[in-house]
View 1 (cartoon, helix red, strand yellow):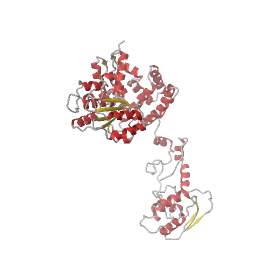
View 2 (cartoon, helix red, strand yellow):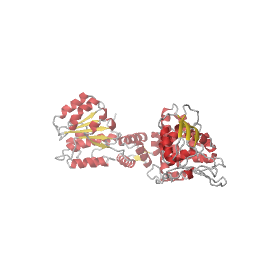
View 3 (cartoon, rainbow, N blue to C red):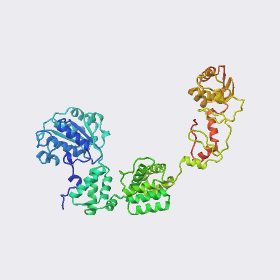
View 4 (tube, helix red, strand yellow):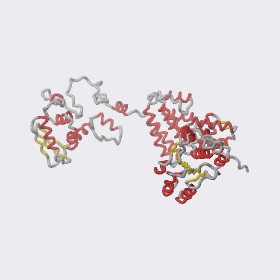
Length: 548
């Protein structure tokens, strides 16, 4: 048996800062620190798996102990005894500790005791603690003092994928570096270079699929490339990668989304059957549909966000999306996205994913052609009734012209009957706030005056809690549902200041089951045919509050 094969993720592991891909900020900072002799005593590297945390720690250990220079160098030779031993994980002064299997305080105490002794072969003793978030609380506490003031010859390098689980007391003692996801284009160049060295045929489309499936992780991408090479024997094609990843071709996804948005339910379900029979993973298909919806939204002309050049689609596919966007509204794409996102946990919990996916398709097609709420209201509104506009005014396109009628004040939305000409209306009897006296002859006048004078607290309490039994100029009989003892005194004082006359406010001891002003407005609103028609469209709809 040949046991000498080394997987690509290990064979092409970065050995120096120049070969560390996708982490330009990290490389620049560390090389500058080494060249200027500003080497910290503790570093912590964090990021998703496969972005180079442990590799960076080893490269930094080489830079500190390389024998090609009299001091630390940002360009370790890689050939000296120390560099080769560190790369092989066999250097006596560079200790890699797996925190997942050395979690206790005793393990940490052994490490700290050994740290007091000077290095044997190198300039520095380097402790690389991988997955440091796995340490116990007592182990972290034991590390604190030494991590803050270690011996001059000791460097700590911590690595973790769960930075939030590391205590703040540890983070504050380290220089933190966040390793970012490696961009797709960078991964593609890296995979193509490796394929050339390995004498492997790698299609551009297959390379892009692998790079996107890697999700920013170099190790994940190389593992997938290794698997694809083993499956194809060295000729990695798009179809082979699609089959390996159990993903549908993007062209198939394009056709499915187009069919869904045109409303052909039978054709869409037949396409799903075919995709499922060909072995595609429905969870991955759902992810591809979400990806399409995201980019179609980004490319919609209503957003003016560009033509989606950065999207994973070809120029021909982008042209198809732009053409489809001419007939699809932004609201439709937004609703489609919400339904797809909600289906992710459903798919994970479903006993039969195929049935769940079929129902998802049906649901998407029904919401895709759903008109907007404004369109529903227009379709169901009586033609003889004026439609409300956004500013609360009435449209009179379908009604004959009428003589001018008194207009309510901006904060009073209570429908009012026509006022006789000899009756003073609110707009005439309630001048602006600079006037000293106004006339109040009705309950509507009182509400309008409270609003005009900006007595918001009095108006709100009166509107929501007071049942008016009788109202006459100079006298109000009412029942206070909350029993505020100061309300009558405050309102009477305000009425005297506003009208110049004394008002008598009588409080009823029992409720007569009368409606408050707010309840009256709500009842009138519910009885409005236009509102009733709108609410009938939604079975569980209710009016929460009425505001102007």
